[in-house]
Each structure stands twice: as C-alpha cells, then as structure tokens.
Image (cartoon, rainbow, N blue to C red):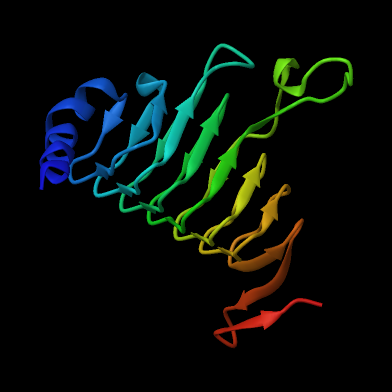
Length: 188
C-alpha cells in the first residue's frame, strides 16, 4: 500500500519536475537507479518495471539522451544506459532483464583494469514502434526495426530490419513477415 502511494506521488508530483519530460499515466516501479534525469524523456502511459536502472550520461561527448515513447511496457530489472542516444518509440514491449546500451568498455590495454579504460561510443540506438524484446536480451549499439521480435537470450550487435524475428548470439534474422501471404516466413 505504501509503495503504491509513493509511486503515485512520484508519477504525479516529483517525476514531471525532475525528468526532461514525464508523460501522464506513466509509472516507474521502485527503480534501482536513475541517472541524468534532465536528459531522459518518458512518454504517456509508459510503465517501467521494478529494479530497473536508467542512465543518460554524456561520458563520450557533450550530449546524451534517452527517449522512451508512449504506451511502452519496460520489464523488470531492465538496464538502459546511454552515453549518446537511445530512442525507444511508441508501443515497445521489453521482457525482464533486458540490457540496452549505446556504448561499451574498451579493453585494449591488458595492464589496466577494464573498468579504468575509456568508454567506446557505439551507434545510436532506435527501437522502432511495436517491437518486442524477449527476456535476457542484450542490445549493444544496434537498432531494432518496426514490429520486430527479438527472441529471449539474444545478443544484438547489428541492426535488425522491420517486420522480422531475430534470435541467437549474435542475433540473426530467422523469419520475415510477408505482407502478400500475411504470414511469418523462414529466411534462408
């Protein structure tokens, strides 16, 4: 009961002030960590599950943004970390334990601990509208096409086209929607 009251106070009074934008009807359930509030925009009626970590930190340049659209459902324990730009369009669904990042640690010098080495900027990420990201998926410097599905446990390191299903590590397209037959068809 107290947790629900805190969620309502945050969503209606606190978050609209501290975020760059926070849409009506949106909720963040007991976050693990939020960094860079003024660089994060969350649309209307979007739910972010508990224990998620959302960070927009300009560690590789002068600007960084995260923009999550309307009517998204971001699962529990998601980790979304931007050093430049991550855009999640409207009506995107992510399962639990999804990692989305537009950067990674370098590991060029074996004499220096990896955590002390520079961060490498990867490509800007856009997860297009209507996509579904399965459980335990990692998306690193790659975009996901409109109404596409990324299967559980996949690692996405290159762009996935619209209307496709991709699985694996690294993820590869296994099906594409055929608008003539109105079916998902295997890709050879």
